Length: 208
Length: 325
Ligand code: B12
Image 1: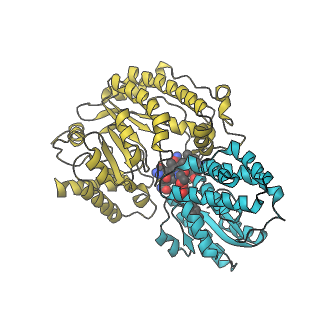
Image 2: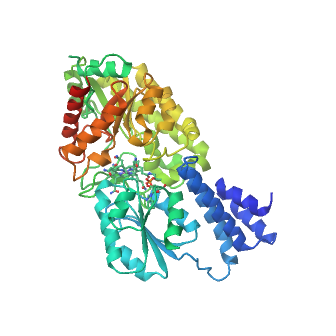
Image 3: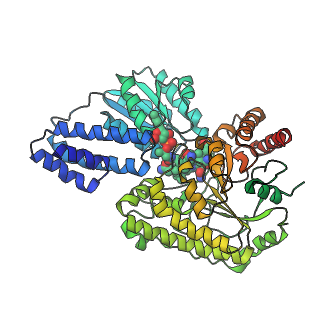
């Protein structure tokens, strides 16, 4: 197996303890850092698809993402400049009153591995804070809002409408168990996805 | 007319029920039984395991706090040092009200039911956060096995107290095993870690006079039903519509029954109306039929989040009983 193949397998199977060494070996063997990163991104894409298809579960996603971040740590000093991602920055958060973040974190990992820079505002994020974060960070192209409670669906709506009303040029994607594509459209979001794998696909699609 | 208990038994044994079982009607909950501290609205508490729970005013419920300062278990390999089970023995006077309640129940009419929560899986993530708990199943499986054994030991000790004092004939036990669309862990992982734990717990109850095990998981968990059967669950409460309940009934009816098929999210919200509730109840009753099925909201106790919802759901079920029986 080539070094780069090895890295891919280690990310896909979430071997976070082995991945750093494998990335180092690949670098030592002369593989370009960007190619290794691309390979890991592709692996996370596979992981996301398998999750969407119900073939793997939350723990497998978590350990794959952890493995990827271990690999990225090794790569970072070898990447030219700060390799500003072409897709821009994504501001993500769970809306006001809601503290569920497992789904949001998975979405964040997948969007990051798709090529966005992530600014994670955490949980219980009021609508204004999304707007502030768009202004405070460079090249924000996407805002992702998560809501898991039926009682925080109005907060989701408020977040989307506040962002839209600010006139800033960003796309908004929403999701969370009670959110439906119809509801997303009704509140004026640009996109919706049912799970983390498809969130990354959708994110790329709407900023393109 | 059959008693609530008889009607339930006819429903889950594939006999001749004379109406739909109405949500939780067959369970008479002995909520006076002593149990670990539970957080109330507007409170922040530290429970007997050292877990901090908070319930901000105006929220639907409480939840464990997992920032670095509050997490009980930061490193699974050190669980022996940080996880200390409380005593399962309560002073006798704490049992008095529960015993009185248990004695007053007409067991021909209803099941004397004890409520047990949180479950084993929930305990693991309350102690260490969901993400750490899920990753530890992969990264430190031996420690997770040992921790789970330790949690089971506590549960069995508490179970013995419930049985000795109250002789329940039904246990309503919480443990959420999934999100709306998938189980948290794969069936293989569930079989390895949680099946053996629950075989011990539910086996112990059944060996000690408990006739009925009702397990709450308001989630997707269709892929875990074979294990539910193996561990002795009689009724899976909380089954969400994402599970394709009619198909589950066809496949497993007779071995286990299903309570739910009405997602709380779509009927239990500030803008609920009796019409919405009736529509969802009707759909559920018509697609699931009369046997091995109990219509009801997926919510994990006999009330709704918003006033009037539970009662309206009862009325909708009464109407459907008139139509279909
Ligand atoms: C785990 C859990 C918790 C954990 C959360 C831990 C954490 N750090 O997040 C704890 C125990 C802390 C908790 C607390 C509470 N919870 Co809770 N919780 C759940 C549970 C069981 C699973 C949620 C989850 O993590 N799923 C796994 C992830 C991977 O799935 P997901 O969140 O759906 O995310 C996926 C998709 O939705 C999508 N997605 C998510 N966000 C986004 C964003 C974008 C932009 C996109 C595109 C996609 C997307 O992609 C994700 C990955 O595939 C659900 C039950 C359920 N059936 O969903 C209840 C549930 C959501 N909780 C509920 C409730 C009521 C609460 C509490 C109020 C009280 C309580 N005691 O239960 C508190 C809430 C506190 C608050 N203010 O937020 C209710 C909500 C009911 C309602 N009417 O809405 C549920 C449905 C359970 C129930 N019926 O009682 N909870």
